[in-house]
Length: 121
Image (cartoon, rainbow, N blue to C red; front, side):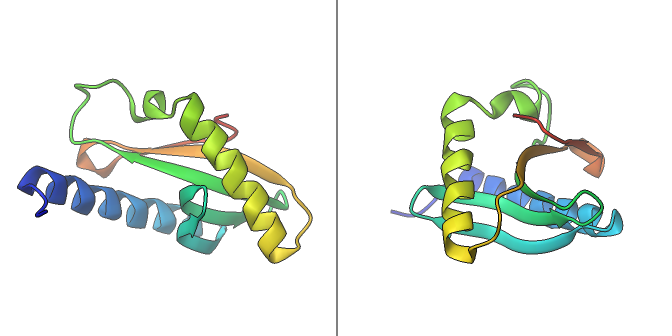
């Protein structure tokens, strides 16, 4: 079934937001390990290493064209938080690395402003 033009617009907006956040994280010294990391439990938008702290950040990127539905961080509910925990466990099993994870949310607002919330959940 063909996607609506609104669905396509959301997908393009989301990918642009993810790319902007990845560049932002690189500028802060993070190493991007994975983008759109797909597991049996779902997808993590970005998996990045915070080299300064020695932590792996699993990043949910929320991009909005407006504030009609609240802040992007408010859209990360209990189900998504649990899904990210499972994604992190799967990542550790796959890589064999010592788990030292945190879960962050990046908000991309109209005009491209990025607000980054470390340890969001």
